[in-house]
Image 1 (cartoon, one colour):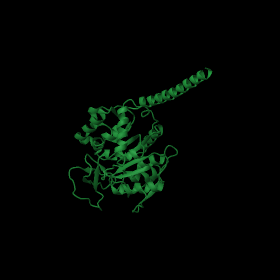
Image 2 (cartoon, helix red, strand yellow):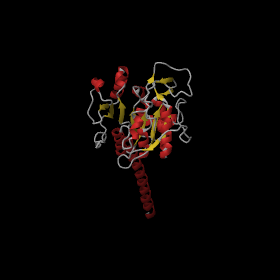
Image 3 (cartoon, helix red, strand yellow):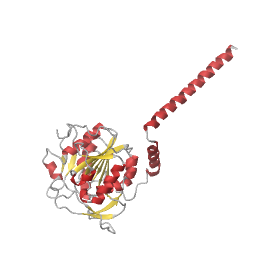
Image 4 (cartoon, helix red, strand yellow):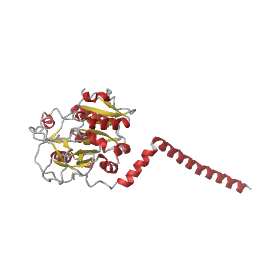
Length: 338
């Protein structure tokens, strides 16, 4: 009789132990499920399994392990935030009066206040990486990589990419930079021409009015287009959860949002810095941008976090930002100019 009672006690204890494990597992799973938007997580998993190795053949990734052909000046940059410095390779000063020459002064860099702000935001939000669309010679890319973040840098002008390529090698950050040689457009695989600016060689406009039948291998002004969504597999394969984006592509900024809805659905994108200087002269492109961000609950802001009025976009500053509504930690960083 005593043996039977002991067996029952042991059996009940075992049942309670198993139930405890099950309930604990259920509660942990429930906690995680409550933190994630179920539809987004399913979409992400689907994207991960279906598209990890399905990169568009139009995406041109620069091989950063190869040597760079070209004889150009490279310098060590100014230290920002007391500890972040990098290398930058420059264009001839007569051809790049603003960007490259800003580094030759030694105590300045291109868009120093804006670069500092991006670095401060990345430091404050350590789970975010950086996407640089219109990287030019790499002012933002190189500092973000030097900070230790993964950077997806996109530019279509070969001489710009050669300089970033060499800067990446000098700074030894090839393991956290993916460099893309394409123009972002509403269609993927088109061949389009860039304009020529004799004093701003690194910042040309994309001419969307005329397609070319074949590429000119020695002409850096003929570029191949991709859609922004074509880059999703790269972000997924590098484990990116979210990113800050900088967009500066000389009036073509609307093509990023027009072709990038999937990236905005898959990843956390709380902050976008955008050049507004040229796009405001294209009302149809402005409408695409305004509609896209309004539908996704972003507010247009100045860099001082003053709300901009959408019906007065012609008077917006030349550079502005889009901040996801209800996110915190993007408007109370110290003034980078101080």
